[in-house]
Amino acid sequence: MEIIKWSKDLETGVEAFDEEHKVLIDTINQVYSLMREGKREEAKKILIEKVAAYADKHFKHEEEVMERYNYPKDRLEGHKKMHHFFVNYLIETLLPEIEKGNEKKFNEALNFIVGWLIMHIKNMDADGYGKWFREKGIEVPDKMVEI
Image 1 (cartoon, one colour):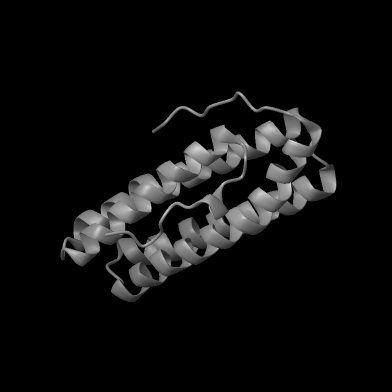
Image 2: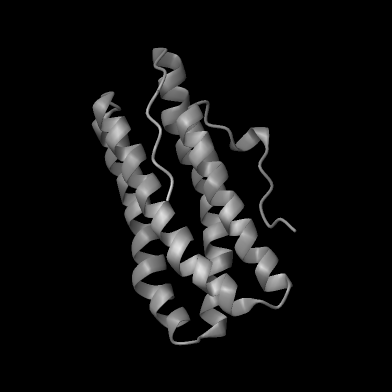
């Protein structure tokens, strides 16, 4: 069962990043399916070991590519701040509580990830760098190595 379904409105127009977003969404859906099956410990393990790590690598990849192609500095800094907020809140606030067995924080983390990711992809990625890269006619060939 999916908690996030990939759809056209999540496409940024930058194939490399869309593929990374799909991996992240598939992994989140895997966590959700495991939860629904009552396999919470396995779901937690994937959230802690894969979702957080992949999101962090993906954010760094986006930022590196935006810098390389001279994405406007003020917009890049705003984008970085959003990434920083996500990583800090998830890794520094929620994950330590999840590791201690706090079930409420586990549910909160999944809800936070889903809501934040959809908003971020639609508003900051697709309407931000996606639109900018398309307007400039820039094709991003860079693909991130999967974890």
